[in-house]
Image (cartoon, rainbow, N blue to C red; front, side, top):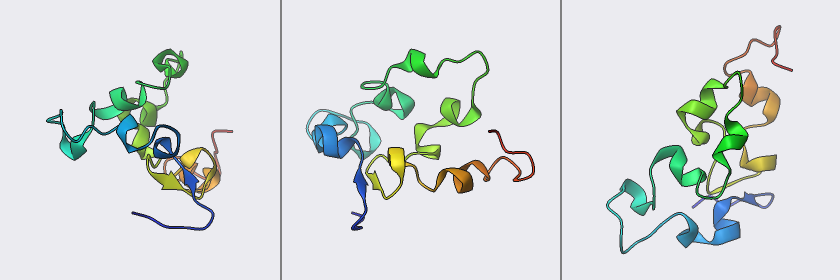
Length: 96
């Protein structure tokens, strides 16, 4: 598991490992309780992400932008916001 002094805990810090994992009653890879974004929507309101114009990474996987175990970034992002957005958006045409 990752270790970092400035690490911010993800869901494991709030609900513990068993918030997402069930080591005794699941056939899902990683011993997860649910698959894909449905796992995240067990705690997060799905309708909060149902916007008129959808953001592609939301439809693909929450893990495109978030690390469910921990990150030194705010909101357990995998990278700083600007760097993360620039993976898809050109710096000359940012989404903000």
